[in-house]
Length: 416
Figure 1 (cartoon, rainbow, N blue to C red):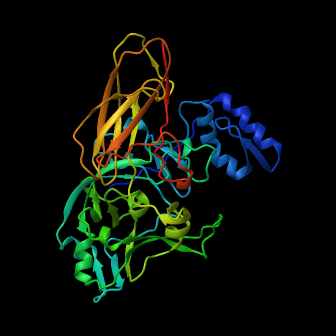
Figure 2: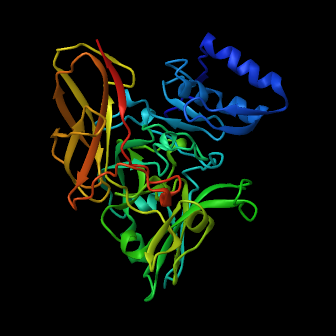
């Protein structure tokens, strides 16, 4: 059995120590001025200690901060939330390098006694063991997952929630049984609307909006998506059994959709005869839609937006003037293949088409572009266009709240 690494190492820059001490000596409740966005927010001593690593990164005071023993970036210690360094993204993401999003403490589940319950608007209630599921016929698919809040650190003003950079995304091979096959066995009744995936993880949300006491993490999926070929209940990740932090013994993976739909530690499925409006559906992981006569209403997040990121060079890297340099990165577009990626070296004023590897829906693809930079500052920006001609927007759409973050973000480098 593989053991997951839990060691964490904090690395502080001496330049940052006076800033920390200054905050902590002020009072029991401090006001931290974010040096990147220039606004104030009240922080308790405990909250400040939890957010110190992010503040240091934002201030540019240290190149390495809050790293786990395996090099992952710690976005929250408890419950554990880890981001993948950009240098580790590409191809198949190793399981130990795959980002971790956790809302509540990781539940302890014995695979030998595990059962999946299927109930609700079905003719036949099911109680399935892991062996039962494996006997239904396994399929393996390569699919990427992106946290719905990936890139939140780039929002201005700073938004609530984990301050992900661009590493809240990963690509893996998933082995499991199609969700549609399980629904077929349960014989879904006519008039079914949503398929609610319920995880074993549980806790109370105390921030506003607060949950009605302890609740499980869950997500309602429209029946059509649940029955699609790219919707799996997986027990293996990268040809090995799921690890606890990635949802062992069973999790959902919905190709092309943001990670909140990929419910981990899945132990119950409830089919409903009307749209599901649970906490994680209506209050969280939802955005404002104005299609009904311009009247805003909250609707659940679904498919990933087109997005291109630059993985090399990195922020503040130094390039050599007059020397050919390869700019590289990754692009994905949820349920659509990537049509093209463009690169700008002047902050988005002009664009050149990049070279893109073959692209398919539900996974990412690599892109490269050759530049020969002149001396001075350089503002690199990449943008993705999908097969439906949807292109990354220049500016942030505030109706998306703190999710679906794919507006253009420059990577500043120096050429000497």
